[in-house]
Image: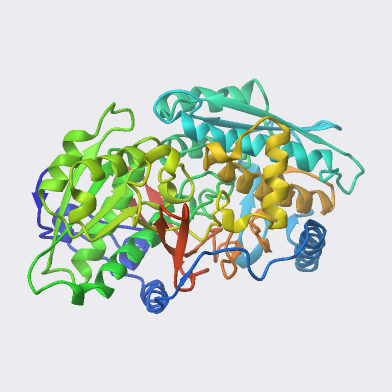
Amino acid sequence: MGKRRIVSFVALGVTAALFAAACGDSDEPGEQASVDEDVLAGVQAGLGDSSTTTGAAAERPGTIEEWRELWAAERAAVVQRIEENGWGLQADGQTILGPEGFTVDLSTCPANWSATEGLTDTAITYGLPIALSGASAETGNIGRGLGAILEAFAEDGAFTDSLGATRSVNFLLKDDMYDPARAIPLVDELLDSEHAFAITTSGSPQTLKTYDKLNDRCVPHLFNPTGHAAWGDPVNHPWTTGMFLPYSTETILWGSFIEERLDEFEDGTITVAALVLDNDAGEFWDSNFQAYIEQSDLLRDRVEYVTERVGQQDPTINVPMTNLAAADPDFFFNMVNGSLCAQSVTEAAENGMREQTPYLFEVSVCGKIQNAVSEEVVGDASDGWWVMGGGTIDFNSPSFDGEPWVEWARAELEERGLDWQSSVSFSTGVTMAWNMAQLLQIAGELEGGLTRANLITAARATEMTNPNYLPGIRWSMDGNADPYWIEGSDVSQWSAEEQMWLQQGDVIELSGETPLCAWDAASSVCR
């Protein structure tokens, strides 16, 4: 796709989770969405701070024992809150209740549904289809890290429930090659052959293709590593949650970042370029970003938005990146994932964009979640690149050497033959494992011990101090009021010399501000 100026929000059919009209009940033709004012205000306030830090461990417990004591106290508080409010499975055996009107009607589940399917007295069967081969194979280390750290928790006796059952995790890793067509039968296999207690899917396209079925089957579908806003739908998809900063919030951060720097450019057109992944995730980033630009009084008449689209399995992105460099952009945003993250950094260095473009951005899932900027992958080509980092710690950074949780997790990975330094994706698996381990423990402490009903109740009512995020980033959900685990972010810039992300200013925390999203697949909008 060549250069184009955004001419009309309506003509482009752009909508997004953070735009109130699109997320409301109205779908009148010609009605424009509006940027959520609370989210925008929070973003703009946070971007006003220009101080630089390493994001190194601060305001964190000093030993792993102190961490464990903190988590135990926080889990106990969650259990107490659930019990005091009478949430969870109700006396009728057909209803689950949670905070802020959260309700699950179990009478709609299959006739043979069981709250304990996938459990034995000694094991929890949990499955994850993810790319283990193909162009996105590096992301398979997410699954390997997840399995390793869950095993470590189990060895420490974490999964002993209120009925006295002590379990390990029977973790099933399946290769979907980042292909929805492969993910669908793998999910079917986990449901019908493996009888998984819970399932996670990886990637927006795969998750969109399978989350209806998983909710129809009433199977916990938690911590899917994607930031699509569709996972913020506790009413219609109560069993599904995401894990990352919502992509729609990320695009507001991008737009506000540009607005903050308009004075650096002479009056006239500012060229904003984007490499867009040709799938559901790429489309969501792109459409949300377009909508922000169109509705911004500061950007609407100044920005020329140029995009090129690429496929996940494309062997090279030389031509689209060359085309974008020819547009001489002032800002570049990389709306891709997997191996394309690093490829775009390398191409930008080779085609001159690195020198001529003042601001180059990795998308959040490329920056700290996938291995796209380190010296062993791209040399010094990534120096100076920016990211809205989603609040995650820089697990591989020397600045976290000696931090108790990080050191414990690194050691557990090494003990199982995994080289955490070889792939940032291991750290995402570590985060997922910590997340799931906390919910399994909370659910296990509720009346009846570990069950699917108790697990989803725990998910919708939990707030804890997550060691995988920076101080100030809140990790929580609150029933129907707040269905997103993370709504905060850092703004960081990569230093090739120090091989770490340098945080620019304070974190921006927006918990509870992102609207719910009942995703309409037919029109690709939130309702």
